[in-house]
Length: 194
Image 1 (spheres, rainbow, N blue to C red):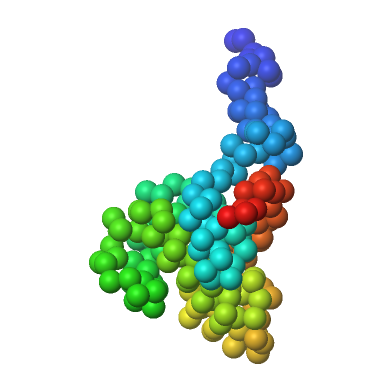
Image 2: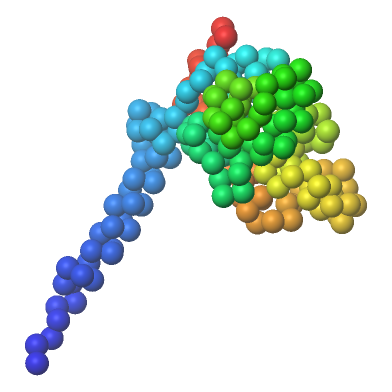
């Protein structure tokens, strides 16, 4: 009976794959700027800048939300039905569109239009920032819904949400804030003069 070598390919291959993925991840966050931009793309700068200005938002925050929500894939549709760059639910988008004076029918296909999605998503984010007193709480509401955030805040007896009720929402808020800083660093002149 022959003994298998401890470094046989079928044992070493998973370790090699994990090390390679770790290296790719490290480069995505600490590698050359061109490599980091591959994992943190920026598109639709004009639409982002226009919506940021109209809604009094930081354009880097909008870019960070887009990257966290869809990775800049305008055709993405979640299992729950959230659609487009900023992953808007059609019902929410319809309400926001009415407030914006947009009369077109808002459905999944309409929400795949990058400019419309950014316009509606930015307005929604701006409304949430106006409703809540801090960015973290507004981002939690963007991710988990205002009803959940209001309930969490009433349970805590506060006016801001310091710890989201769902670990997924907490991770989302942290990711968007981290991405916002990363976008400002990777694309320092992206919105200058727009």
